[in-house]
Amino acid sequence: MKIAITSYGEDLKSKMDKSFGRAKWFILMDSGTGSFAAHSNKQNVNAAQGAGIQAAQNVVNLGAEALLSGNVGPNAFRVLSAAGVRMFIVQGDKTIEEAVNEWKEGNLQEITEATIEGHWV
Image 1 (cartoon, rainbow, N blue to C red):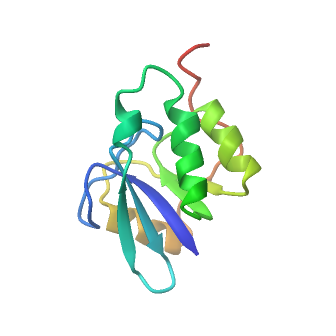
Image 2: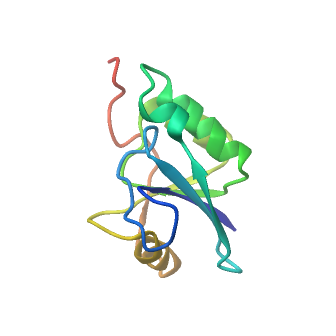
């Protein structure tokens, strides 16, 4: 399964970025092989609006089947949900590696709605 994880850096020792739409990087990992690649989200970090929607579309285009993040707003949630991407919330200050291990162990909560309000509510 391909998993997208919001990250401050480009490797598995990097800290998770708690935001989704404005995360600096997305780590895309194959949970079966452990292989991964870092994908920049630079275009959305300072976007005036629409960061969540665009980031969600990028994650879908990468072929992610699951997302690990700290929060997901309503617009991103709709895009990801419509594409069948399962979303899991990571609590606390974790590295990418720690978050993936928690996911593999079944210790992350799957969300069924946005975890924060949109910026323009």
